[in-house]
Image 1 (tube, helix red, strand yellow):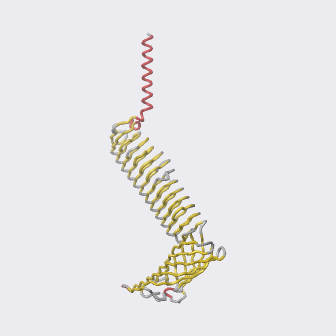
Image 2 (cartoon, one colour; image 1 turned 120 degrees about the vertical axis):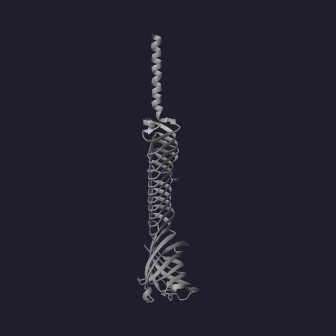
Image 3 (spheres, helix red, strand yellow; image 1 turned 30 degrees about the vertical axis):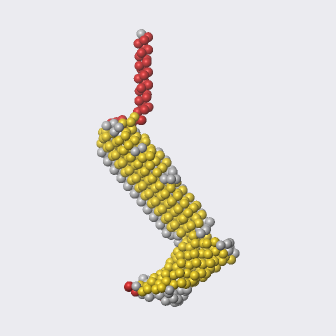
Length: 379
């Protein structure tokens, strides 16, 4: 009796251990293939979420505990655990943890925890708690946190805390970025390079900040835009006159080295067709000492009567400048000018031409050496 009782206890104990072991290890069990239509109509049936598969193929949607190879579904892949291969779906991928893998879908990729690899989709990527790698989306890329070496490419918006390179059609929003390129707006705290079609906003920019209209930063030595609001930079109001009698009132703003120029003016030669002037361009400061420097400027000036007739002039000038005190600076220097006009409008504004040519449709191009002088006040 004692022997039978001991045997029964031993067998029951072994069965209990085996049962507990199966329950604990159930989700990590690996199967070579998982094929089906939609959960639970598959080779793994109702236990599909407990298995990791080396290969999965589903006509509509697949459910699994993990994937080590390719998971392909006509509509969606739902992977509760780790995916280390490629998840490809016609509509969406939903993954617990993407580890050195790729998620490719027609509409959306969503990772709950860490995503490490490539996420490519037609509409939106949701990178989860931490993203390492590249996100490519037709509309937007999002991640709660991101490795500074990661990259984002989208049609409309990129957003995470840190990123290496971010390229989008409309807006980038990050805490820090090495490179931000946007069709319209870039926003970050720290950046190496910002290129925005309309607007850049940052606190500290180590490299170049380029915008079509406006740059805003605490510190940015190389700001290129029509208007640059740099806290530790320069802002000046300038009044100048050149050889064509264009008198320009301009706002010059930028960093320690580069600055933008935006001006309006009037031509005193009393030609009604070229009476009003508008100017835009960029400039650079070359410092010699605390009171003397050389300003180089490239600007485009348009004279018009607000009808279809205009006179266009591109100018590159080198202006030695001397500052009196802290705020007032006078400058003067030579310029090289390229003129383009039509129907003879403004052709006689230049004193002479070193080269000129009349083209078809009464168009005229010419080049000449001129000069400009003025005074500017630091704001």
